[in-house]
Length: 212
Image (cartoon, rainbow, N blue to C red):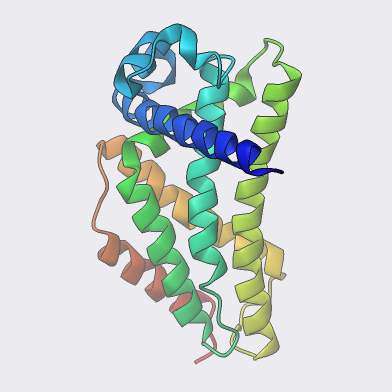
């Protein structure tokens, strides 16, 4: 890639991110269904027509935004795991990053949850390019689960786990606990006390999972 191509790519990426930043604000305020492209364009300082130079429709904007935001979460999680630390310490770090991320992006996370449910129940055909974006988003959740499983497997090798369940089942149950917290926040219409939730999760793990 020559200098001109690099410059053009830099400009295009910058403008794409401006659009996505604007979309995050509008989606968080109105949800996916009620958001119109005109509103995203106005918030970003673009014309509606100019949006089509970057994204084909609202679905692509939303999925591109969701993938970008969860990439940021994955980057934070990648540096967390420390094999030498105890299971509870590793999970405390993971819980804090995940719950803080969901709390900071609460309105958009709720929109994402509703969007995922909509996609799972959709009867209409999704365009091929959109399916790729949707699958990319689903894979990010799988990566989060794999990081969690890595913590559990490491703890099992160090005899820190007492429960007689396979590691994947343990990971599924822990994921369900986190989702339960997010769902409760969704019902309440706002995030709860993150530190309290973390302490409760750790207390549960200590009593049900960890060898003392």
